[in-house]
Each structure stands twice: as C-alpha cells, then as structure tokens.
Image (cartoon, rainbow, N blue to C red):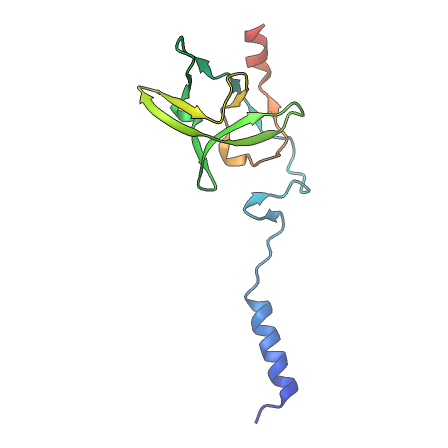
Length: 132
C-alpha cells in the first residue's frame, strides 16, 4: 500500500519530469542574455516605391515569423523589429505590399534563422561601403 506522502512525491516527480528547460531557450527565440558572440551580420535594403505609389519588396524578404507574414526592419537602435505585412499581387520576384510599410524602412535581408523581434544586429560593412 502507498502512503499519502509517497503518492505526493510520485506526483511531484512526474510533473517535474515533464518539464524541460534548456539553457538559452526563451519562448522559441535565442535568449538575449546568453552571449553567443557577435550579433548576426545583416544586409539592408529599402522597399521599392512604384510610380503609382504602391510599395514592393523582393519575394525572399517576405517571410513568416512564428506563422505571421512580414519582414524584419532595422530599428534606430540597430535591432531587428518584426513588422507584420499584408501582401497584394505577386510581380515576378517582387510582392506588392498593401499595408505594413511606408516605404522609408530599412528591411533586413539575412540571416532570418538567427533573428527575433528585438535582437541586436550588425550591418554588413561591405554593403555600407558600396552605398557611399
């Protein structure tokens, strides 16, 4: 026969056994408190404003982040910020953006796998030199 104290211990053990906490895990994103070295190196592009005033971006910039369509943009603090977008028509390799962008944002192009909303980023120096 199992006593009440033993039963509680078994229940407690089962509950603890079902919880898995991984170091550096923060809700599906890299934990910003874990120093993995430098922030990701990214390139930036601007959306293209068409003569009719519509905004287009390259198809590869339009991603799904946690199931939500959008892009990562560069904040003034050099952080990645996810911006939800509503897409319109597809024109070859570009997509019309119906809402979510004004046209003056700086869109991050890569690497999406290491970005999350608020993650610090570094701008590709080679890109900055070629734009000057």
